[in-house]
Amino acid sequence: MSVVLIAELNRAGPPDALEREAKIASHIINCLVQFRGRHSALAERAYNAAITDFQQGSGGYSPEVLRQITRATINVRRQIDGALQRVHERGEGTANSGC
Image (cartoon, rainbow, N blue to C red; front, side):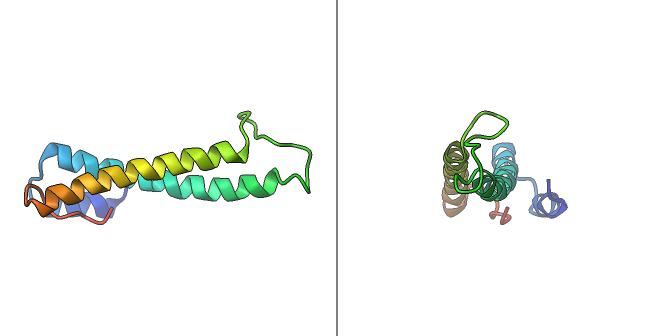
């Protein structure tokens, strides 16, 4: 977890516990999306049919499955961020820390 995120949450005052947890979850999910994006690019190159006969990774899945997981993770992040934005717009929570 980012030290900056923790500092922002502490400086913002006492936010609602659920909102704080949602911000932390959004930050963690963002890290997962970044990792999976890099992993997906590596997998595409590693399992390119023109280069190798392997069509799946050590986990037994193709690069397409990794892309689907990444898209699903992005959708979850958008849902959390959207909920945080709605709370902020209603004035019910603290400002979004830019996780």
